[in-house]
Length: 152
Image (cartoon, rainbow, N blue to C red; front, side, top):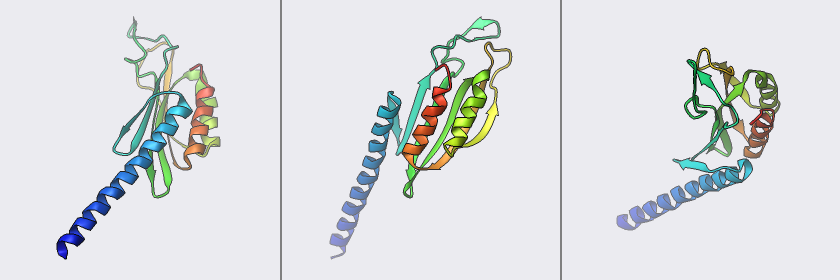
């Protein structure tokens, strides 16, 4: 009898883990469509990264790639207790900062940091960090509206 209970518990646990993983994958697939980019999935976290290829930066007097300068929009989503947590970082041109902050705040996302990573880069790049807990669709709408305020 104990073996049957243990086996039933194991099967239920595996089924539940699979259902949670499938939910994470479904959210990641939604995000791929919403942002029109591939989404990395790891441990139930959906990671989005959109590189800013239109910016041609220099630093230390040398032309460097956008990848080297981490010119990207990064954000990750995780479904927890019926809500979605999002944490992100956006690489912005200096003149994009205020319009992007307005969109993030209007979408109920908290701005947690604004800073630079380098010195003497051209053009001047600022990095905005944000977070939120709530509805996936509302969050993605706010992030997309913020990105739309940039030169992409």
